[in-house]
Image (cartoon, rainbow, N blue to C red):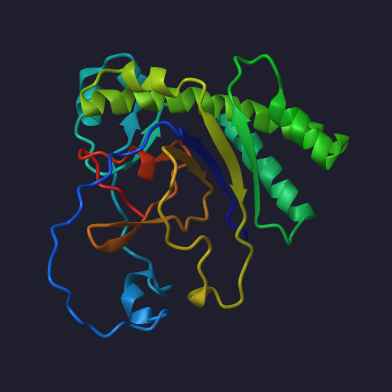
Length: 261
C-alpha cells in the first residue's frame, strides 16, 4: 500500500529567532577531518528493521481550549516539545476523507509522482486561487480536485490561526498576539506519496529533516511511518485519524520549546 500524507506548511518571512552570540574564541585544535560521507556520524538516521518506540503525546482538545476549559488551557501551557497533536479541531471528517480520497486518485493516475505542492494565501475568501490554479495547470477534469483542496487549504488556514492562539497562551503572550501576527500568512500545501519499495529496510521516505517554516500541520493515513527524534532517540507517531499532528518549525523556535526532527 502507499503511504500518503497531507501537509500544510504555514510560514512568515517576518518571524525568525534572534541570532545567537558568537562563541568565545579558543585556540585552534588540529583534528583529522572525517570523510564527507562518514555514515558513523549519522547512526541515528540509518533505516532500521525495528519499529522505534512510540512517543505518547497527550492530544490537546482545541475546541475545549478555545472555550476556555481550564484543563485544556492548563495542558496548553505545559507544552515542552515543538510537536503535539490536536483533536476536536473543527475540520470536518468529510473534508479530510475527501482530501485523502482525491490524493489517492491523483497518485494512482500518476504513479511516478511522489509529491504535489502548491502555494496558498488567504485573501479574505474572495477568490478560489487553488481551484483555479489546479484546473488551469492540470485541466478541467481536475476542477473538483481543485475545489477539494481549496476547501482544505481554507480549513488549514483557520486551524493554523486557532493553533497560534494556543501557542500564544503557551508562551504567555496571550491568545491574540500570534494570531494577529500570522493573519494573512502564506502557506504551502503538499501531498506526499511513498509507493511500495522492494527493499524497504534500507529506504527512507522523506529523510531526517527539520521544518524550516513556522508551523506544519499534518494529517496521517492509517499506514503510519511518521517518526520524530526526541531526547536522542527516534520515536514513532501512531496514526490517529481524529487528530492533526502539529510541528513547530525552525523560524518559531523559542526557549520554551525543544525543536524535533
